[in-house]
Amino acid sequence: MAHEYTIDKARLVLKQGDITREDTDAIVNAANASLMGGGGVDGAIHRAGGPAILEACKAIVARRGRLPTGQAVITPGGELPARHVIHTVGPVWRDGGGGEPAQLADAYRNSLRLAREHGLASVAFPSISTGAYGYPIGLAADVALRTVAAELRAHGSPAEVRFVLFSEADLQTYEKTARAMAREAGADSAPDRG
Ligand code: ADP
Picture 1 (tube, rainbow, N blue to C red):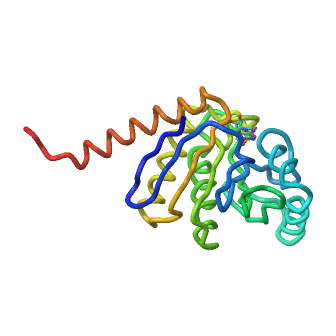
Picture 2 (cartoon, rainbow, N blue to C red):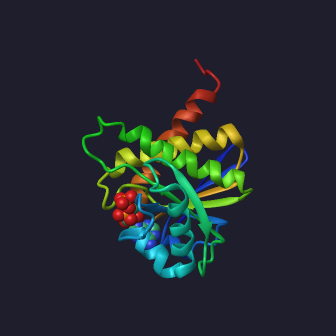
């Protein structure tokens, strides 16, 4: 079941699924610095999208080198339903004291900036860094949702952002965080009833 929130005029959707099937204007790949594909969601996107995505990634790396953590680039979507793939590199979790939260926020922020620059109306994110990169899911959900909500409030676009969580447990974690954020926002704007 999908859960929906409205942030100003934008829609924030949380759902369980396989991101390679999403028909948003772009899906975001939790890539690594080499942009050469790998396991997890990265491997799934390259398998489903075909060789055009890897060709575009190779051209980017030839031009600008490896992609630093927190940065994002855009390629065509190949055979995916999504027209574009935004590749971003999340941080590897160590102990949280090495700037991981700021780097994770950068990955979401820079992905959304690229989406705006390309006039994309809808973007789907996986849970960046919470697989092989080991970021604890509850902490990652907090950074992901707060960063995306702040961007939507600041810019009003893209019109729809979806989080596509691979497991039911991950969806529940994101949903719990989103409900807590919605309560805080409600408390901020609620009239004082004494
Ligand atoms: P990272 O290296 O950034 O941790 P991973 O791909 O290992 O990236 O994991 C990121 C998240 O993507 C994990 O929560 C994993 O369960 C999820 N994931 C893996 N395959 C898919 C898929 N096809 N669609 C959506 N999410 C996926």
